[in-house]
Image (cartoon, rainbow, N blue to C red; front, side):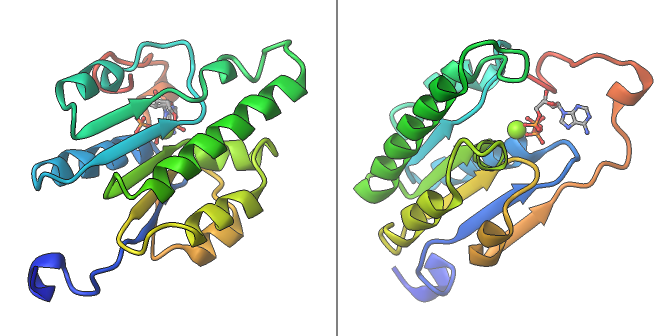
Length: 184
Ligand code: ATP
Ligand code: MG
């Protein structure tokens, strides 16, 4: 492939979607859709997920085998009000990181999305050093997308592309509840 076709540098990127405004996970999914159109392979590992049925859990099946979706953070359901011991959360987070590292290292994917991993780091469930190691160990052509608010400084430093979603308005603020197909 020519440099122009490959987009220049030829190497994979570290991409961060952070900030308090809506659109971080949606941006990563949009990129996945774009990449799949070029027959690229994408894996999305979900670190923290609520009990809601997110539409992408269903639609990702329509995009197989190019797109693989893994709900690694199932155990995080209700973490905020969850009574299960912190060690359980840490263990599940550790397993999620190991799984994600395997996916990144495997070379089987062009893009690996680590959805909500920034929250897991912020909550102290995932050591930032483990994530930096994962980024260092990746094959050079693999891009990694990290989503979630309050991205760690070290992750931002390490990234090639960082976008901060900033809330200007959110319907939630005027009491409009989450909408199917827009929020989940
Ligand atoms: P989305 O999945 O819609 O792209 P996100 O990834 O930017 O959102 P998260 O922090 O992962 O945001 O939050 C997930 C849920 O919270 C979604 O249902 C989303 O619509 C909602 N949400 C996101 N930002 C806000 C906000 N500023 N105020 C209220 N709810 C929000
Ligand atoms: Mg999100």
